Image (cartoon, rainbow over all chains, first blue to last red; front, side):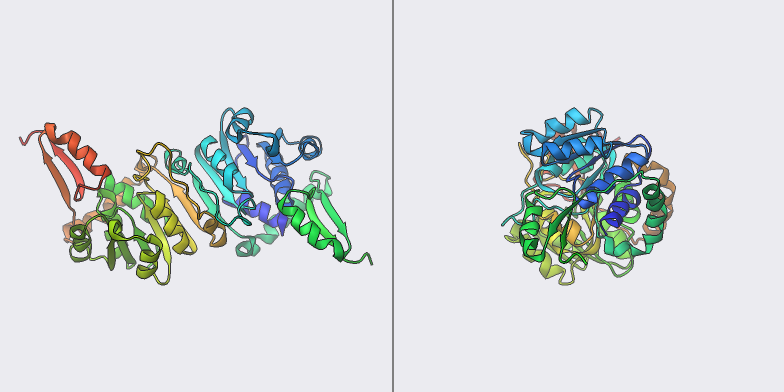
Length: 208
Length: 208
């Protein structure tokens, strides 16, 4: 499902072209790491954000991202994005919403596309943060679309056709975070919301 | 140009279908009145908002809107929209942004479409208002797109082909607000931002 979400949001909704500038937030999540690799394989310039130096290093070394930054260490997300994208962003795959989305809107290029798979930064707030830079949608003719993979299962064969060769050729990597035992499930779930997981969070109930 | 803007945003970007629920803000502006009439001619259920009782009455009597409300008299825009759209909104043609957009997001239906032609409520603010309900984009799989008519001039023949018969048959009405003399231009311009104009604001420099 994470792989399909990545495929639908990036390849189908954002119509990427070779050489375009792509930003993926929460890049170390199960969806983000696939989006970033699909974008690299398409010949895009890809930047990711994650919540620790360890994750940022893996994004660049293991996944081959062009740049990556630790959003927890950046006091000014707008400045971080301008540093990584002096030419601006063509495609933003949004997993987090909130302040990151607001900063991205300031850095989008004309005719940019934003696929919104989730807004994890907002789920546990009493009141969601206000997004102030939506005027960019008009000034820069941007399309922004929320989606869920459940509407696109008919595209599963296309997804498999695209991804399976890459996996067989070792061109796609995958990182999972395994919690052993059901008793560790609740802590693993809570950890997702503070970025504790390194890749897809899996809970192994029993190894047999 | 206003007619083309209406056509592009509504007919091209929002792919309207007969029977869908359509909301147009700032309906008495040059763009809004055309959007509303195109939607009615397509067999949609159409609601508009305007800033005076006089305008609201004309929307219903002259333009044949299904419902209309005076946004200046509604303390709770969310409640006003729920009253007009108990089933929710399929298409929102946004001319104003801000609080109206935020309330609309709460009332969109699944797979809704929002065309953003402008956000006039935000242009003269030191800091734009925060939009808090963007999570609806994900929950309801909504597409939101900013656009400008300049990108769509190649569709001018389609627009003329659609609209000219309606105008000839008297099926489309138009309201203009005329300021006489260049000396009245500045006040007319300022009036647009407080909703003083009744329809397209025109300044007649000389009648000859």
